[in-house]
Length: 113
Image (cartoon, rainbow, N blue to C red; front, side, top):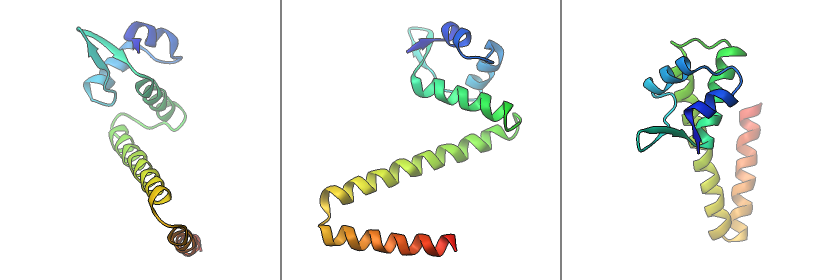
């Protein structure tokens, strides 16, 4: 966990005013440790993502909530697909796994062409 002062000092391009605004807008959700805001690695990664989206991709503050929401949905779907893959690998017989892999390959070829 990292304090807000250390975070602002260590993350290039981050200033306290922007971070306070992002917290107020719930773009970033730090933990409250006895009245002090602390950030986990996932929070730091999100802050760096916001900085990159604002800088490199020039996403403005009006579009940012939409972009972040879509990315959150994408990451959640990715976790769900990984969990499904793990469940299939751990429980399905080999022939079922092969049939699923073959069907997914066919589906992906259809999507790509």
